[in-house]
Image (cartoon, rainbow, N blue to C red; front, side, top):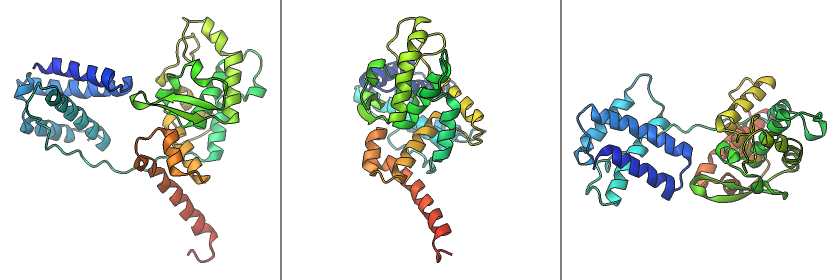
Length: 307
């Protein structure tokens, strides 16, 4: 089978049948485009021509590139290539998988960076006025405050937040989130986020909606179109600058802070796992290392015989 057709079929499979997000599919597409271009330079354009030696050479070539790719990027590249060839074997297109002996690199275990509670409060205050303090006619600030309050209150991924419809919010104390693989989960929403969302829905969204085409999406841009992931990142970056937060702050920083603060407050790790939408509790347990480090710091500074 021609490799370009094989890639198209694989991307349709992961998008439609596996329900992977548009962001993930785009990453696979970039990885596999580079893979096909590398193979084409060597005169390989049919899946039957791909050998284990070629795959190993491709990965080694990418690993030795300058500047050196991050271990996580290299691991994702290997996953993309392996997924393609395994798909061809499962579909009966190829008899053997040339990536069968390929082993992913070990990515360094990085502790997620979380903000302190005081820093989160500064960030939220810098994003826009609290509902009770918002002046008449204030639109974007009220929207941004609601957006950041919801990100921190739920720990949802930015891709999950921008995909929310108005009906997903409802008027209760929980939020319905569609995560990876289109899996739904229910996450509680605190009173601060609830008040910010209610203010946005009643005072801001109707005006923004009139500026664009009708859409059920919860968060809208200044022209009435659904808010994008990139716009959300810029909103958070600008709020962080106004709050004088020198550390890198992204939508994922709020997710990390959500999990860390829950565990510091005594939440069970499996409850946090459910709210984050992690398939395995081992993914959530990385946050326990953060809280253990905090406990060590408190012990070292507080106990009379710690030193």
